[in-house]
Image (cartoon, rainbow, N blue to C red):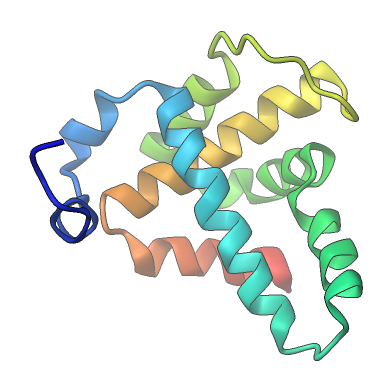
Length: 136
């Protein structure tokens, strides 16, 4: 690897064009981590034991919940954001869901792709607008 970790992390912000060239599954990969971190951080304010925090987090991050979330946000999304969700939803994923329907899993992938896209393109304000809608 030719860059150190610090440089990689600080230079990860991409242009919309660069992010659009990533596969939807790459966007979903990073989006899954970003969303999980947001939920875990949000839940810390509830001051629950770790086991309870985990149970609460699962209610937000499971495929069925993410599918419901993306459907509830649909009217708030721009055309560009809808296209990212659609690309994620229609991507060929070679893993199969364990505890979700295929439809929910596909929409969850679309949601995660959107989060990854917003994160990688430094659209934090927009990302937090959507996150605030999710938790309200």
